[in-house]
Length: 244
Image (cartoon, rainbow, N blue to C red; front, side):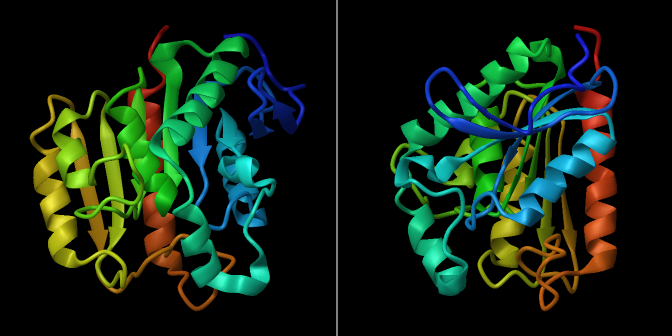
C-alpha cells in the first residue's frame, strides 16, 4: 500500500459522492469505510475518523445525506428529525455510496484484503449489510438497528442477513438500548453464529443506544465506549492487516 499522509480531508468520488477522509501520518495499515449514525457527518463522526487515522488506518466516511443536499441533519430537530431523515434512504443508494468509498480506498492503494467497514447506529446496520455483499476483510457494527424490522427497501432485517456474512463481523451493543431489545441482541448473536466466518457480539449492561457518542453526555458510557473501541481496533488489526 502506498503512503496516503497527504490525502485531502474532503474529497468527491467520480460518481459525485462526497467523502470525509482522514489519513495516518505514514503508510496505512489498511482502510476503513466509516458509516455515520442518523445525524450524518457530525464533529463526533469526524473524530472517529481521526481516531482511526491515529491508529494507522485510512478512514473514508461517505456522506449518505448528499442526495438531500446536506452533510448532517439539522441539530435543532434532534433525534426525531434524524430518525425521520434516515428513512429517506434506499438500499441501492446506500450500497452505491459504500461502494464509492471502497473504490476510493482502492485508488489510495488499499487492497481488498485490507479494507474494512465500521458503522454506528444506522451505520452499524449498513456495515453488517455491506459485509454480506462486498469483498471486505472485516466489519464492525456499533448498535446497528433494524435487527428484526427493516429500515429501508432492499435491506433485509439483520437477523435475516447475518447468516450470510462474508467477512468476520463484530457487533457492539448496549443491553439498555431503548431502540434495540435484549431479545433482538441475543437473536442477532445467534443468527451471526450461523455465518461461515468468525463473528462475535458483545453486549454491555448499563449501556444504551449510542453509548460511544462522547458528544452526548446523557447517553455516553465511558467504560463501555472504551472497551468497545479497544475491541474494534483489535478486531481490525486481526482481520484487516493481512498481506494483500
